Length: 405
Image (cartoon, rainbow, N blue to C red; front, side, top):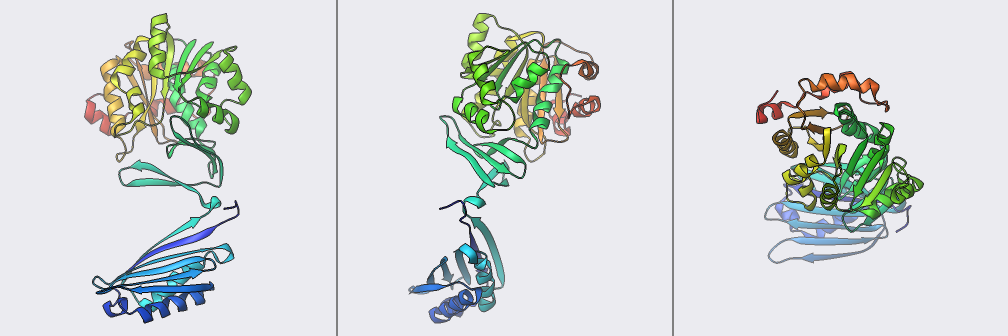
């Protein structure tokens, strides 16, 4: 299949078709032939089968691909499948519409799927029974690393990164995402010298932390191949030379290809302390998943043990929408069990909520954050004082669930 190949695949269900017509092979074959010819496709051969006691299948082999109908007289249902490619591509839709006129169904359900390299899609789960469809205009990377199925592709939001069908970042919105995840934490922390980033393979979080004043950033990611492919192909985050320097640990960013759990244990044994720890992993799953352990109580407790005086733990905590907020409610509860001060940042320009916790009791953390923000070396493009105030208002479901605020 070449990059130029494209085709249209139409799947239709006709309901309420006359039962006698559904069992009449000659009339069904004539209707299919007439519809295909009128749609401009070329019939090579037609085969058929009359079933006992009832039901018919008619299959047409086309120069452009195939067409078929399968009938169930007992229920008046006809299932139609037409696929055409090449210059007549859209003829599939026309053929089904013409067949509808011939068979006069009471109801019609039709789905049209564009096929070919130029028609590749990712169906991202966003909630129970809900998916978001991403049109991929060009596939840059499509591979299975030892840990995930990774895709980098050009979309209408620019070059975009997907992990196991979940959008991780896009060229269009990545700055909004990364600033929402980090800038409130920078402003809440007592100081910002040493930072630990767990995940965030693009490298944006590490580089942003250096720009915010950190002199030492440990970046931990278990998936070396993903990090390397991001550096090679994403127009944001690490370049290949940036990553090489981080791997060599010759600059402020120290790259560690390691399991986050193991790294925390080793860092604690060395007596390491951090002013900010950021957890940026693929979304916590409602169902069991291997990486869920890096969102749960024991891992968060290990992070807390590594915080310096006035240090902050930041985490991408889930989505605030009522149809997708189960993991956010979990994170909210966990943080309140662990930290004396907990502040959310509910992004108004992205779909995620981020949570920031510190063992230090701060009477008015938002006032502290808004006062610190203008003094940060990093100048945020998408977070200002008003955004911090608004973003610190947790969703109503969290206030009623935990009973705070």
